[in-house]
Length: 97
Figure (tube, helix red, strand yellow):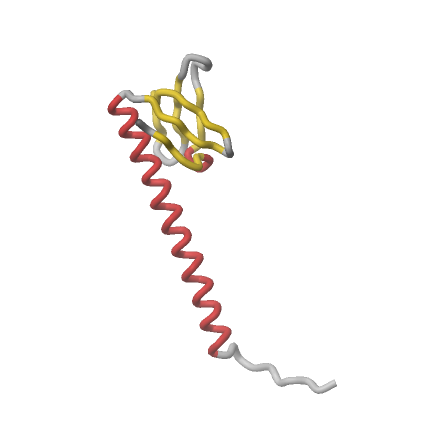
C-alpha cells in the first residue's frame, strides 16, 4: 500500500477553510442584526403602547409589550393570559400594525 508523505495544508484546503469561516461569521452578523431588529420593533411597540404578534416556534402569540429585558426576554399581556414571558432568542418573527 503506497503511503503519501504528510503535506502541510494545500492552498485549496486553506481557501476552503477560509470560505467556510467567512460564511459562518456572516451568518452570525445577520443573526445579530435580526436580534437587534427584533428588539427595536419591541421597543417601538412598548413606546407606542400598541399590540404586537410574536412568532415563536410556529406559534403566534399576540399581546401588548409591558416590559423588555434587553438581550434576555420580553413580557407581554393579553386578554387570555395575564402575563407572557418570551425569550428573545426564541422569537422567529414579529408582526406589528
